[in-house]
Image (cartoon, rainbow, N blue to C red; front, side, top):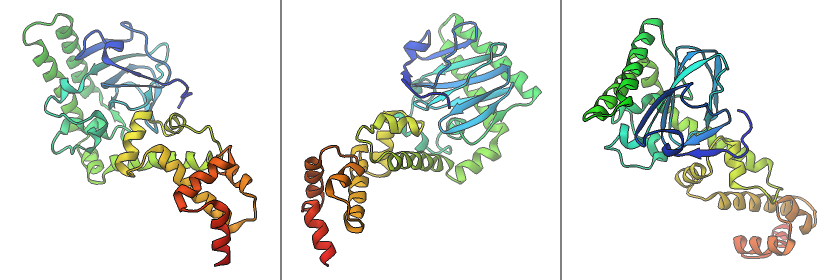
Length: 301
């Protein structure tokens, strides 16, 4: 994925003309060209121009007649070529799923049996939604209908817009039914979370000696937002990022104390502590004794 510096999370009011539903093409607003996230759902439809889609930790082809389904808070960017064109649809969770009150970060945990319209969003990182000519013509007709309805909102326009949106999602669910059901049966969304956590733990392991390591840096390395990483760690491990890093540093400290003759000051540096006294306080709090005593007792034993 392109550079992850200064990743922004956008709200509907920042990238849409309305707070519930917004549809536009390339001419209406310049596309974002750097990785970003948003608090709402998004569907992108490629009308022309070959490119790649970077969504979460996956990089997949995005040729013409392809659709991308992006969950809230999912890091992504689709760099459209200058001669390309696309349609983009933004909509809030309340617009699509008024009956679902869970946090947007927990949407992946809802089964597609309960909410089938979530299926393409849950498994976007694993599938390519490339449509044939006839099916794409139907999609274009739905897009045009939505643009007409959204231009002048009247009584009932929102219901009609939602109907068209559900037809669009439903068509993709029909076309890719076998693949989506297979993904659901294999719990692919959980595999995606495990992969993200693996990227986080790898980053922590590689940067354990760096006292400046931050949640923000680890989240960027795992293609997650800091808020989502915090949420994911609490859900999957029951720990905060700081607790996870400290546990890994204490584990390394124990290994160094028991299996090397390195001075405690150097072990503190290897474990990411710039101050030996602070390292000793943290170690004593975790193990009930200072590092020197820990080494003597265990080596004697």
